[in-house]
Length: 112
Length: 117
Image 1 (cartoon, chains in turn yellow, green):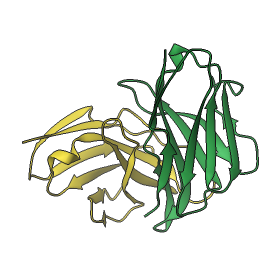
Image 2 (image 1 turned 90 degrees about the horizontal axis):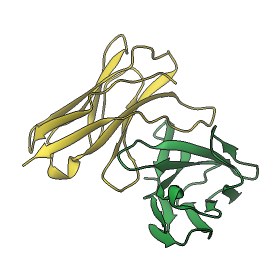
Image 3 (image 1 turned 180 degrees about the vertical axis):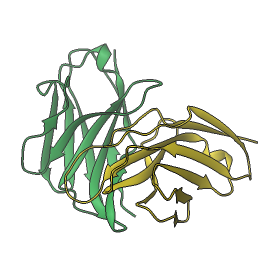
């Protein structure tokens, strides 16, 4: 699976949009971009995934650049409960059964 | 959405004893489950891949005789930490893999905090 690079930490004011960047310059054509987050002392939670089109769900939006070498996760109206470590992971979907490779992620702190 | 239940949420055991952790996929059948370990201030590290009806596959450096994995049904995988020692104290997390929303997704349990005294 391709490697990802994320800033170690970010702050965001409550109520504002949180934009979390991720670089994945070695992503290959069959690899998806997945985002998970881990709130302290809990298991990771799926947020969103995408291949090349921008995606939106009830939690977040995912913007993938045209060359697919980077992406941004957007939490449109951050709340204190969004404070967590956010992991950007690229991996091939469908066949195969490999576990996820977690990097260090971005520790997002939402400030009141 | 998919739900994975993991029990117990925390356990304290004496050095030398064994501890079993259960991971259940509640609303979907998971042919593959994964076990991770997370030490304080570190990221999750994959320990092993658990396949229903066959032997687990362990990552390099993980002792298969110490961390026994059983995946007897499509909804249940267990991890037994045998002869636990204080250095085995960690946060253990399972996940179940399935095709959801058109692509592969991994749903995680809530984790088990193991403390060996």
